[in-house]
Figure 1 (cartoon, one colour):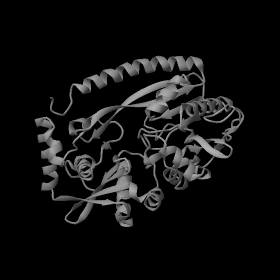
Figure 2: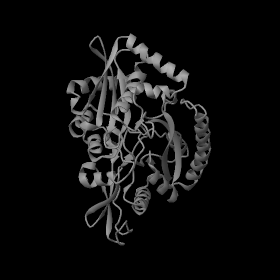
Figure 3: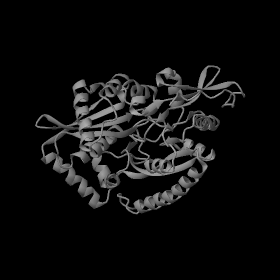
Figure 4: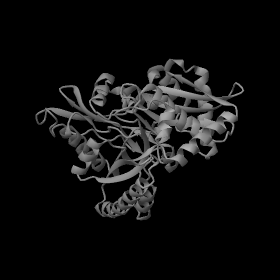
Length: 401
């Protein structure tokens, strides 16, 4: 497919008169000013490290999210007098891998009707199912400009659809006002106690129902009895050899599922160089030998942590729970962190103290009849999600009262 055309100037933007701004597309995030991009990110109360310029550039420059892997960058920038006033991470996709919002059935239905679903337009952080801002703008007017530009880009280039994944509340509301179809799912997140944070992990356990508390204690004991000890390293304390072993485990996880790793080793080398303070690595050792790792992303400024990747070269009963949930939660409590996000899906996380949280995506489809059919599907799916969340609420793992 040819590179999508830039949109014409002159739709009006936040604080800018008509015809005083322009929309441009860039085939690499590196073509955008890092300070200006990050200023837009930090203007959002729901900002995460995954929207930072360095993270997105690393995805591109490491050959992880590039045209050869089905992610053709077309970063959307709205400028006023040469200054960046709104933007979003935009890709032309030739498949739906690495998105964690599943539209394969839509693609099949579209193609069974003799139409081409791919390529499609996607506003998202590749391989990263973490909610946060996607429409980088300082107000609703800027978000509306971005949404309008996305529709025009899709229409003018004959793309089947445009999608925004893992939106924060401001973006969700803007997309709904613009008439985009909304889709909802569920993740599981842990929140520290308020107003008095947990004193330690034992204090956290004390708040759980007896059976949940007993199960966690048993699982942790099994790891100890297996002779496994976990070491934590943060930031510059993660040595290249640690990253090498982590990547060995990371690729092993994909091989076990007969899949191909999304991220290259070079991506993590770039993270160690450009965003070292945003990473926490747990390495599990048995008799001094590393046997497993768990990588956690950090937002120190906001006190948020994000479970990202896990892998092992030896099987140890319950080690996954220890490395991915218990030790990270223990660390978060020790450091006074406010939130830990456990990643995509995983109802088993709830019995370990992570509670259900709705996530949102928004979708625009060029074909009106197909959009109507998808809209009916989303209504049924949404009712199912509502019922699921209600049912989960009845299984809260914490003591009542």
